[in-house]
Length: 258
Length: 281
Image 1: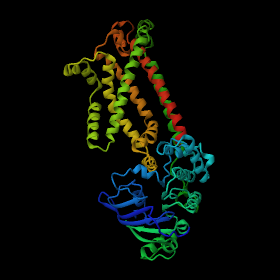
Image 2: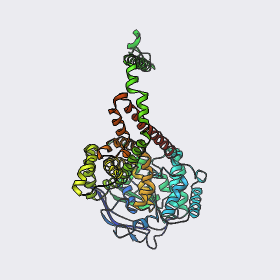
Image 3: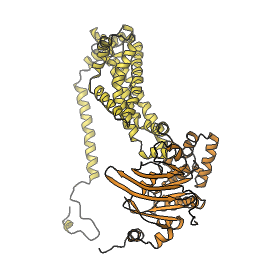
Image 4: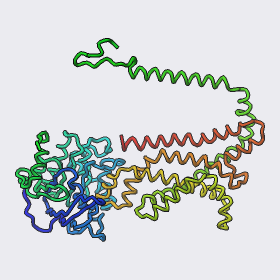
């Protein structure tokens, strides 16, 4: 949780990123650098473009304009082997997206075997180590449907970690969970952050953003409104829009008389 | 329905204005249905002239006359079905992928094909293979099985393509995104993630296609068959001409078709249950 000094080449360098779905502009000029070991939490109202920003990093969405450099490679370059870049970038989805027809273990070994060409024994060993790490070593042979949402999400994290990524993207990882299951997933993410993983986390968990995040980025209307140390952005926001948003999130029953 | 219904006591519901509760009405309605069913069955049983039915539809003599022909015809029907299905499934898969392609021309060609072959009767396609194709292309395909497979396969491919497309599209998008985010290529994602999950989804409608194809083999006689190539329907129709047992031959071959299709339905249900029990609740 040390505020990493921005030295060396950033893991992610986003410059002038724009994304439109047809006529609708979702991102209108985003600049963001993420350095090795940094945990950047992206917060903001729904529809502000947080998820789209994240999905542009591993090219699940194709940017309309601007540059996205990941580990020194411009992923918007049409000649880039995006599959190769993606093996270094883990992603965790709001809806878990575990492969429904495979066991927990197979979920964690499939891409290791097929993409990284690891041997069955090695893939198995790495998968089990990561399942151990998220506290689910004993559920290796279960199918996703037999697990709770929190367990499924932790398997999804283990699946991503099994590829030995250098960057992890989290797209609202706890938003689909029952409240009592959120803590387990956040705990795993906190361990990951403490271990030095570079992470971009789109989240509504303000406590997590404040405690675990090195930086917090507040987005609204397709732009970054505020970007700074976690304590400052959440504790003492400079921008009025940030303040209004945080007030609504932290004190939802409070009503403003307009 | 008491007089106090206008002002119920605090914390209680006003008395229902219905005489019977919904559950009670449902029970009464179901009893009425059963009673109606029994009445219809009894009426039909009484109306049938059982003696005539016996001699015309279930005539033992006529049945044993046709019995000798059945094993060969049964196998031929199976042969035409499987050959047709092989063509239909292969071509249908290609068409389904074309239909989902990002290339506009492929999509368009697939749609034209599907609309055409889905829209014309299978009968016309079979006749075309018997007469039009030899004339138009100057080639006569010597094997009846190949001709049957092509004719029936071309038609069923149109239906199978649509079934497969629906199945592939029914696999949640998140499954593809998860696979791609792990660095899996488009093709690998399709093979390892999408197709296995689509398989379970398309199993029931594919069973349907297979059964429809089984029955469509009754059109193969239009290709002009030698005796040894007769399918079930053909021997049934021929036997009708030797009038003795009335419609008995049709009943016999009907039973033969059921012998093929019923186990299929059973197998599909078994597979569906087996693959479904693990993957989804």
